Length: 129
Image (tube, rainbow, N blue to C red):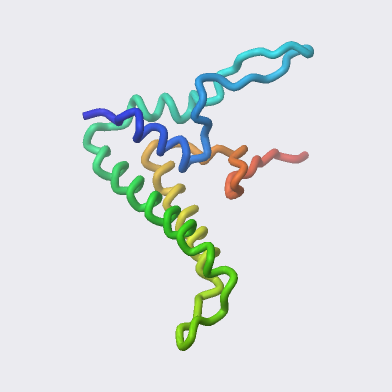
């Protein structure tokens, strides 16, 4: 069974790609449609059926890490609750794990994380010299 549309939305989200039909850029001052999704879109249509269980496992893990980051936001405001000490590094540790699993998901598709991902962790490398 191929990837569902919802799974594709989730893959785009985690890998930092757009969930829009087309993005626009300006050419000589005029808006022009360009395809920005070709890397991930092509990979999602060509993913091996035998790899789908791994893809779905990665999506579950990424969703779980992301949900934990959101659910634990209020803990950033506390150092201790009675006898319980809060791990002040939790968010950064979760982010490192998230980035690692995004990289692993990207490996399954043979693509890079979108270097223009506004959440960080992407980055554009330009050779100098």
